[in-house]
Image (cartoon, rainbow, N blue to C red):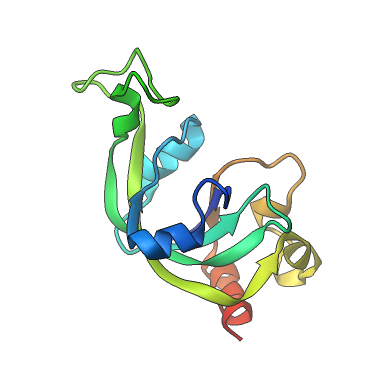
Length: 152
């Protein structure tokens, strides 16, 4: 099992949306490194820290789980979508996404500031300057530590 942090702007898709929908395809990712994480490294059962980005405050809202392995992102074929990719074909898609399912909300929201001030989180990519990647690996120790804080 692997652990991840996945960012979403809460006004676009929040953990509340995921709870209501139960599952979602993590569509619209248009960064090759993030796509490759989904295509090559994520597996069913992997645990995800759901991070609200560009929010006041930004931070960890809860937990999700990878419920289906990567499949072609259907938005790349939709000419009406802002994520349309004219170079992609059904035979040779360019963009992929995993499906996530809701696990739980944190009782205690963990803000970015909290992460920056927690010595146990000092190596997390999310607190590094200039790190904007929407999908990031997290180690097991960090994941379990944050789950304890979030569920206290």
